[in-house]
Length: 107
Image (cartoon, rainbow, N blue to C red; front, side, top):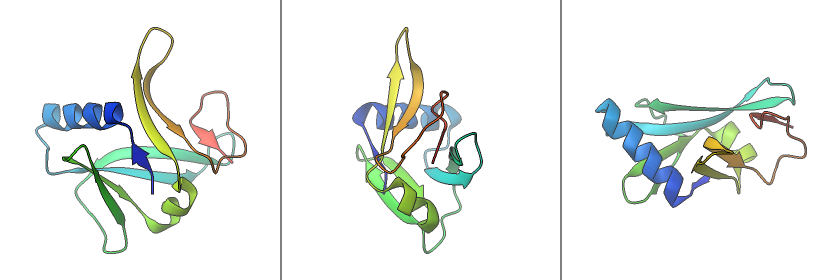
């Protein structure tokens, strides 16, 4: 299961509050595609399957991962940065043997 840093959890909560959708969860998934073989996908989701893995961060942010994606995200960390050189969400994944230049796909 992926973990969220406090900064990422805070930003997700801020986005949910701005959408007025505090009852939704952040779904993190891995899909075939991208220039390195797999790509990350993140979106807010209210449809949680019985076999989805769920975790809560910062006491209020629910994260959902499907079983197939969970295997590829084991030990991964989602962070959020807001700076001059880098801004946005990024995933550090110890399972990735190779990543592309954009950081959005891996193998």
